[in-house]
Length: 284
Length: 284
Image: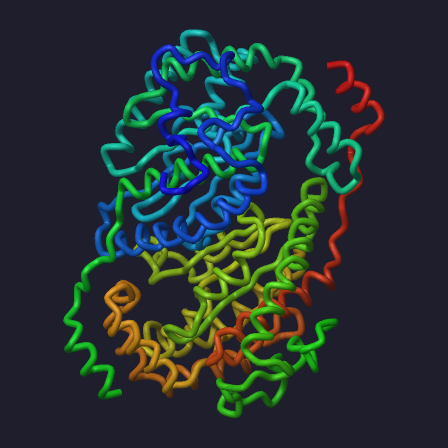
């Protein structure tokens, strides 16, 4: 990272590698970042412009090269961890026309008649797009496992199916960035409590949130299992401490910038005769 | 308008009513606005917050009331008039999660096997959303008419079908704001010329743009015809002078604010027992 406040790359620090243990991550930490909240917010704004420019080039490149790359950000988290804030403050800084956003809800009756990846495939970003999944196919090995919505052998099958699926996307040029926003049990309690205290936040509260909250240890176990089974070289997981919203946003932005810089998209060369077009235009 | 620089409401000034003549509109004018570019940009930023807050309430309201309103902005224009800039600078100021954006391209082979409104219906924003159509069903009476892609009686039929279709949406709670961004022939020439001069803008240039440009008078005639046939009380057209990008953005923002204020969305009342939930949460 060029930025003075980053002391180490979040793409390295936050990556889920061999031996990773979720229980060892402190949700209140700010790994690799030397500044506080104020510096973090300023750095987020400053880097937003670079993010925006790289997005435009990524999109532009795809207009003449249909096989060019795309980016897919997968966001997973316990309720109230800040997925919406990432979409708004990180993704929202760039042109909505180059973003494909999909929030996956509880599957519909029709979706349940298909394999769990059926509805996912339809939302994979095309060349040039930055896709964002707010929840994803990982729900099928999270709530699916914790609430036993499918038999154990089906859950087992899904880990392998996910790895194969993501490998196929990667081979097609989809750069996958998988992020778990990690908040503490106490932080969630405080956030849900605030939603209950403020009438203008009631709409964000769902009684089901407390039901899931009561299964916190089981969810942490399901996350640990999926990290072990699905964090690959091609499509790694990153666990982002998220008790500090400003840090989580900055870190996810940095992860996306890292991918975009590695893609290094280029302005496409005109597929028409520029001088001839100038003459045609001048004649009108 | 509360804003000091607006001397009159754009919702009134720019509206296409009886006797409207497109040829009388000056694309370089800034009707109803007393400031210049600098004031306009500052006012755009200032009003963005209000727009954002109204959007959040619109969305929130729909979460418990599935029959609540939505907004649909229809954008039509000649090439390079600034549709993209509206999406980016006006719509981009609010939460991407509450926006449904659809750019309509040349119809696919499958779309052509259906009525022209088939692909449109699928993209109508659901309750709580702000929908944006970058081009729309109006292409079917614009290029459709100018290039005679359909017989004259079919074009005639479409005007009536559009009015009926939009009336149905309006009855369902979709507030439709139809905007034509109006630039002059010379301004388009300058903008296309800039795209040809700058290699980082080549990707935005399409030789077909000059083909359409050569049919400018025919397009203006097709716009005049559709204004006369489809500007209704429920779904009026607004012609926004767009030679000055800052004015066009400010005016479209004002039109959307006007609709949102008339909707006056309210925070929904909790459909759960707030005190009981506080107790449940405290016990976790």
